[in-house]
Structures are given as C-alpha cells and as structure tokens.
Image (cartoon, rainbow, N blue to C red; front, side):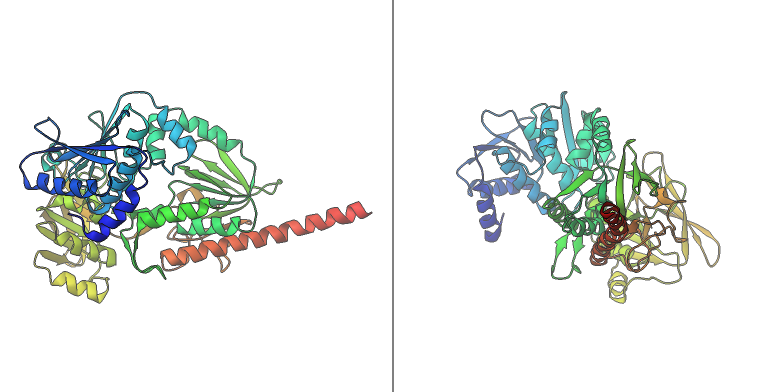
Length: 531
C-alpha cells in the first residue's frame, strides 16, 4: 500500500510514540476493506508500539478504524482510507494518541481539556480537499485531549449514501451530535470558540488591556506575516491581529511559482508563515476581525476597533487584510451556497462525481477549474462574460481538447436555480442576441476573481474605485502612520511573492516613520533639560 520511501519516513515519525497505540479495524469482505487492512499492516510494521485488532460486523462504518491507547479514554475514528491530503492527519493522530505532544499553545490545549458536555463530531472530507485536514486534525486533537469529545472523519466519496442522505455538497462539512455544525475550513481555536461561549468575552478583555504597539499588523496572510517579521527584527513592539492566519493562501492548492521552492501547498506554507512569525517576539491575536480604523489623535496612536468590542492602539499600522472570492451577486447564489454553489473545485469536486456542473469565469482560475472537474464529473459547461476566454493559451488548448466540456462566451449568469434544498440549474443571458437560456445541472463553481477586504476602511483611508487601498511606492496610505500591503492594495499582480515583498517594505516604511516622528520630540526634550 505504501511505497518504501513513505514507509521509511513513517518509521522515523513513529519513533516518537511514547505509549502503545491500538488500531481497531472494522471491515467487511469488500475491496476497500482489504485496501485499508493493507495500509494498517504497513503502519503496524513500522513500530512495535502499534497493534492492529480486526473486527467484522461490529456495527461501525466499514471500512473504518479507530485509534486508542490502553488506559486512555480516546474516541477517534477514520471512516475510509485517509490518503492524499489526509495521510498527514493520520500520522498526526497516531503520534498524538501515542502521547507525542501537540504544538498548539498551552492555553488552547487547556481550554480544550476543560470543555464540558457530550460532543460527537462527524467530519466529511474529500481526499483532494486542502481545507479538510485542518478541521480533521483539530477535532482529532480535541478527541485525544478530552474524553467527552468523540470524532469520526469520513471520506465522503466512499460513503456516498451518507453524503446523499445528508445532502452534503461541500467539504469539509462537520456535524455535531447529528446536527450541522459548520462547513469550510476551521481551526481548533475557532471550534473551541464556538463551544466555549465565554471565550470571546475573555479574549476581548485580554486584548483591551494590552499596551500600545509600535507596529500593529492587521491581517495574517503573506504580506502580514512578512510585515510582522520585518518589524519584530527591528526590536520594536509588534502585534498581529488576524481573522485567520494564512489568509487566502489557506485556500490555495499547488504553489509552484514561489521562488526557490519548486512546489508547496497553501496550508503547508501558511503553517510555515505562522511558525516563522512566532519565532520572534510578536503578539499574535488570531480570530480577530477589524471593524474600524481611527486615525491618530492627540496621543499619536492609531486605533483599530475589533468585532468583539475590544480595540488596539499602535504608533503605526500595516493593513494587510487581503482579498476573498468575488461572488456573482445573482438570485439563488447565497441561498444555494454549499448546496451546489461552490468556490473551491479541488475541495468540492469529488462530491459531484458523475454529475453536470458549470464553471463561471474564463480566466486562468476558471479554465483550470473546468479542466480539473472534467476528470471527475459527467459534463462541464464553462460560462465566460467576455467574447473570448482570458486564460493562458496552453490552458485553453487543454480545455478544448476535453470531450465533456462546453464553452459558452458572451454570456451573463443571471440566476441560480434550485428546489429549495440544492442546485438544479442556472439561467444565463446571451449578451449578443439577448436571449435567456436555462442549463440543467447540479453544481456551479464560481471563479470570477477577487474582492479586497476593505469595506471596513471606507471613509477613513483612500480607496480606488475597485475598493483597493491606495498606496505609494513606500506602502503609505492617505492616513499618516498607516501603511498597507498585499492583495488589498492597488499594487498590481496579486501574487504571494509580491505580497511578501510589499509587506516587508511596508514594515520598513513604518519603522522609518517611527524614527522620523520620534526624533524631534526627543531632541526638544534633551535641549529643555540642558537649559
């Protein structure tokens, strides 16, 4: 099941086990059960601390397997074969069940241990979903830490009957005690915040008591991480307030144009960014959404108000709030979000196997999505507003070579149709003839670009007609002491490497601002003392 290189790597990881791990397999006579047993045997062979117990007709999903350790009350199960992106989740689960400590903060781990209640989580994932491992790993860790938390990670492609019965059309989808809990990427911090109702209030009070920063970075994507590192290296008081550390990188699949790194994936890069930032004396405040920017007053401090009611003050601020997927803004889009309307073909594509879908957008993202989906679904219709596709020629050639793809140009999507539960089709208008047409399908993947996360800055900082923060060559905004970087700004070409460079530049500019604005006051003080 596993190749020799992977076995060698796995053996090295499993040497970190501190206590025995029992894998209890629930199987039948099917091929998938046999594949799972082969995988578990490969794992068992890499460590003498691991044993495998095979059971049939035990009432559990088949094929599935549970991880436990003698003397510890742990309820953690994988339903299916956690390969692809989820193999890392399996390795981490083995290590944590086997006593290897988590890298999460001590405060967060203690918060999980103190949760009280009866929590049965079920997470539906797909093996191609880059967002799913974060959720699976977070809930697995919670199940290891707290015996009142149980978790089952379920491969939606393998348990299609459950997916159909629960009408799951987006992954990750999480159920708690049989009821829908949430969909999409979630961190352990976010999950705990939902379960621990007093957490937000405590965090707000903690934030409100913080002293003013020299540099406060708002946003935790590549630009924000770079700004924080460059500021911290100057030895000045640096803070980061981020809604989710990693930003849009977390939603990126393959990254092959980050110079000197031939290939990586978004979640991996995001984790490395956060790890790098935390190596410095940076106050990282995650899960914090900024709602208002107040320019500096008589005290010389810029204020950033947060959604939880707290506020932060700083001598300078670097805005790096990034961007998000642009929506079509048509009737039915919001109603059927995660019920057939999707924005991540890598994550949700496997749920539409054998079905008919549409991709909205003819740029690189849209054409790449259509190519990926064509290998999974029955048919793809790509709809482009302009008279021609805008994607690179090589992508267009590949798309046109596929037999199950139809391309419609000069078309405007006007409505998403459904039966109240899920998508059934869409309506588009021919921009040349003006006729309306209806397509019967089960999925709509929207790939029409990005919108900057700057609504909260309107009326405070100068924005372009597209809502981007206007910056000069130094990253300065229209507000003194406030700088900006990354996809939220007017800097062209929204790329990770560019965002990092702009974030670094904004931090250096903020430091220069601090030097130049503080020097006169210090000089006057010295002269006054001399007199």
